[in-house]
Amino acid sequence: MTLTWRYYLSHADRSHFRWLVFGLWKNGDISTPLMTVLKSGSLVSYSNRVVWLGNKTTASFRLHGVSISDDGFYGCKLDFEAFTVRDSVRLTVIGKNANFFFPTKPRVSLSAFSHFVGHG
Image (cartoon, rainbow, N blue to C red; front, top):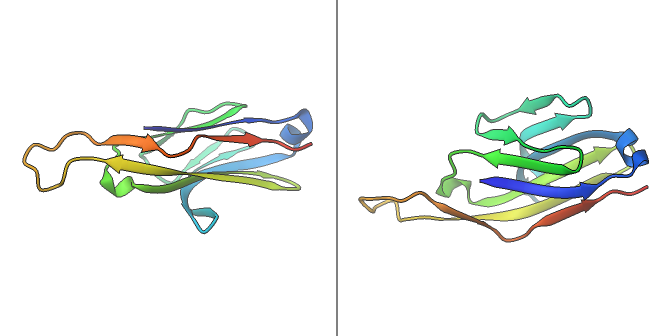
């Protein structure tokens, strides 16, 4: 299951970029970080289930082993020296009832597709 945000950053924005964080979303911000990408390109992962697939114009994260318990809100936050950009999506996991004898792999849908637009 892959969550992707596309964005455009001007040259000025890129020079002021500090970090990007992906994680669980609550009350308008990241409540539990799952992965941070630093300006240097270094990755700080807080979960072995998340893989970075992004680049300079896309924040993309693959979440492995998706289950019903992963249902909820996820967000992405880009931090710059003068401002922060935040956005979130609702992840809905639809699967068989856990009481069924032959469970199937969950299906996943996103309720939104987000675009970041840089300033500057």
